[in-house]
Length: 169
Length: 243
Length: 74
Image (cartoon, chains in turn orange, brown, blue):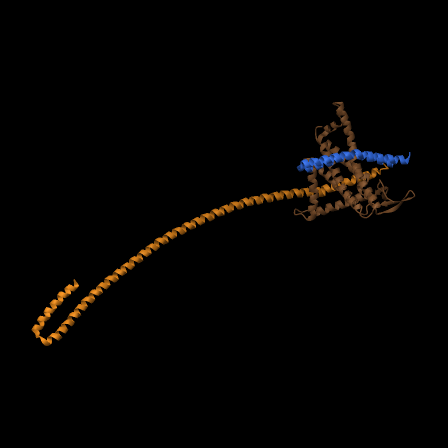
């Protein structure tokens, strides 16, 4: 054994050396690092679980938001429809009333015109009569006496009257 | 001339206590490891630095590796097998650094001048490997007894039949041969590697050693793995009930 | 004792002792690679077991090494 270099004291020293190494490494390297690895694993698992939870929550929220948006959209559309219908009704009413007004105004204008025409006609006839009388007096007065004058005038007037009646009718 | 020595050389002596070059290197490795440990420990944070990631990868990876052999009881065995792996691989690799086996001084011993290197890989010394083997095998027995109680000894002494009795004796022998094979496997591989490198460097010092250095890096890793994995396998075999 | 004869013995012990483990390691590695080829998913487990089996084979060579070392240095 001696020739192979084995010496009990050196052997013992190496045993002690290695034991010291085992103790130091265990206490200051393996335990803290394995603990740290475990803790990190736990933390990562927690984080993953949290992120999963968040994802599901977000999905829920998204779904909710979509629902609310849908409802709002539907309601808005309904309201717009309603207002459109109301507006159409109102439009029709306004148009109808305007038409009526216009018709009324037209009627009124027509009657006014007729009356004016009638009045114009009667004025015209009166003046014509006076003018005829004047003219006949001037022309006839020089030739006929009063009596004949009147006679003729009356006859003429009768004629005119009948003519006029014919005209009117 | 080529310097090959089976034993570690004494480089100093303090009060009758011999300090060999491999013991010196072992202390060096311990110093490096303990420094690394305290560097890691002092900056341990939940959000890791790059250095911490490396250390966590080392420890966590080793833990997973041994978990595939020892299962749930890894927590119990990890201090031993993990430290075995880390210590052996550091010692092996530190022995490949330039200067190991070449930096030294002449020492007069028995009237002759003998070259004595200051550094020698710790595992190229039977004291170190025997110490590791002893610790490993004794721990295996300890956990066997602790887990199985007195039934642990049944595998060594079984009087039910002559066949079992003989198998039991073989098992006793195999426990001792475990020490030998652990110690000499590691020593043989590392020592042979050093001799190989020394011979190659002696024959052709420039480019030729490079592939062999790569080989020795691999061997150093494999030996660390084999030593710790075998310990883990023996541990799980010793604590398994039923034979 | 004749020093030269001792050296021959050392060489023979190591050399002959390496034959068996060499064959054994070759078989183990070959079979493991076959197994990996057949079942690539189990590579990790096969590799671990292969290393353990190789270590056991190697133990025989180590006994030869021990004998050789003892012969040489005692």
